[in-house]
View 1 (cartoon, rainbow, N blue to C red):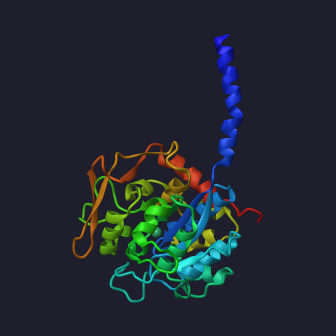
View 2 (view 1 turned 90 degrees about the horizontal axis):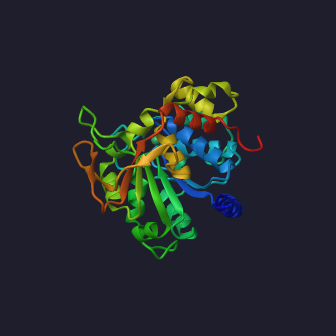
View 3 (view 1 turned 90 degrees about the vertical axis):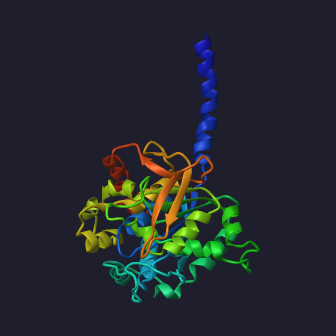
Length: 339
Ligand SMILES: [Ca+2]
């Protein structure tokens, strides 16, 4: 009898649980990418579009943090191909020291200009796009409080510049206040955990070049930061199943020019998947701590300090890399809804 009562009580709860699952709001994401030297940015953007098609996320904007006139058009072409031609794109104006530095020509890319040349889009040059900081401010100001997830998969110059921004016509709040009000969390593909240096003493790519920007963004970010460190994406290899897709797919073309359609590490895809779906069964989160950036000439590196007061955590692998890879491959090869 007791069992029956329990069963009846559970049955009464089921509609509420189902309703709750269906009522889950899409995660509002701003995607901040270099999309130049490596190709996993393209895979990550494909994952975001696939998750948008499933109603799990809403892509509010793409911000470009590297210096390269083809990245904006490339991202615009991919967004357009996925049926979202009006996603705003912002372009950096404050990059001090990207890869390879010093290089006035910007970060080279094996694919960005080719994607832009092959697929329809509106934006002709990255620098035709609005300043990323202004676009951040405009979008954040219009969003509900504590609702936005920032996913960065490149250098941290845009985020540092956002924190440095002053009140203006877009918002009466300065950058730090605006982030604190609107950003639920920042998911950062960057750093290496818990040991931040490689054997040669160097740091992780995204945080090491514009070290001053990394220091400002990471140390002063006023809401929780979750790092998907180098070690997470490095184990997860994706991209080879793109060879089964038609050549008319821009994600396939980008990987073709970068890897020859062999696999590539999945740093940016992993951060993006986590940003939308959370840790789920795939990862656990570290204890809280503080990601301390060291400013070493010419490039910096990160360190990890465990402290219960910390606003930072990093992902820890839980499932085998191949299992995560299967999920990512399925998303990055999904055709756009309606195509
Ligand atoms: Ca990247």
